Amino acid sequence: MIKKMTCIECPKGCTLSVDIENCKVAKVDGAKCPKGTAYAVSEAESPVRIFTATVMADGLNLKLVPVRTDKPIPKRDIFKAAEETGRMRIKAPLEAGDTIIENFLGLGVKLVATREATRLTGR
Amino acid sequence: MVKRDLVVVGGGPAGMAAVIAAHENGIRDILLIERDQYLGGLLNQCIHTGFGLDYFGELLTGPEYADRFIKKIRAIPDIEVSTRSFAVRLTGDRTLTYLKPGGIFTVRPKALIMATGCRERTREMIHIPGTRPAGIFSAGLAQRLINIEGLLPGKEAVIIGSGDIGLIMARRFILEGAKVKAIVEIQAKTRGLTRNVVQCVEDFGIPIYFNHKVLKIYGKNRVEKVTVAEVDEGMNEIAGTRTTIECDTVLVSVGLIPENELIEMAGVPIDKGMDSGIFVCGNSFKVYDYVDSVTSDSEKAGKLAAEYIKSAVS
Image (cartoon, rainbow over all chains, first blue to last red; front, side):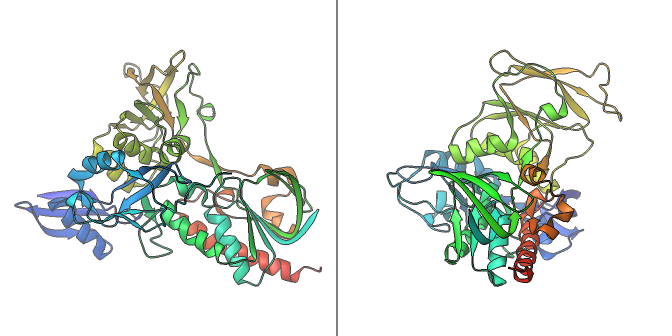
């Protein structure tokens, strides 16, 4: 079975033609770089996404600290991830790139801050 | 009035790249003016990934992309950063007036770089009739409310237009527990990147209607519903296709316009600005698709301004 998909690895958005046999990718056409081929295999066999969200901050200069997973997580876990970041609170100051959770949801990925947050000082 | 070598208005990606490049090209007396409390501009509210592939060879979020430049600027003591500073007046001889807590200030630099970004097109600009209830937001404003202020603008949204910010906000609404009833695009294809249609719309099964337009917005105090119809090639309603969608929120994502009010006030045509030491870069020059290109082009603006300063008879 040939499936058409758009690569999301970069803004070029190559149209990929993916030959799938028995739920496995046999051949990928249309990718302009190796990332596209890898994306097609992942997207057809077990789709993943980088997860980004915000976490409420307490006592810091920002109301919300933006966060991401350092690696992509399974697409099916995106809502679970959003619920988790919705429950969390950050109280300690952070640098962009600091790890907040070492093993996020047991998925083997880190949840990291993407922006600096400092302690709130009275003005 | 204070004299400076270089003043840059706007501390977003364009202004940050410009000041760093000007410094690298030998300028030491630099003032960077930013109206927000922090540097970073629109990048701070763009918490999604998609930035930096060209410039850094890495996939970054907006705040991460901004952070790299913020750290660089902090490490250069010659660059004075004035936040919470709002430029209000510019004259053709480069005299700039700005407000900041504590007073009103005037500065006349040898060269000026305007990096004031762009503004969103509004509902009024695309002439959508109806009432003016609460619940109508530009997509970028909704993005700021959700990602910076921690406020959810509504529970059931219809998005007008399929610009990138609108597509990205569709996903944010869903992940924050709200519904997106429809994305309505008058053209036959998306105005945004295909990758955003894939990862923000199709991933979440959000209905996207091409060749459709919102005819009217209804609601007294709060948005209650919109009417939608299919359009023909002339973008006129096709009879018999009208439907109603109930919603409490309308997001408008129909494009961006360079912000150039101060340059207009100064009476300097943008293409003649370089003769009078006024340079423009970033989205205030033209609306870019990728921040990486804003950075590269703004570095050129910083270098050109440095050359202008060095060649100017002092």
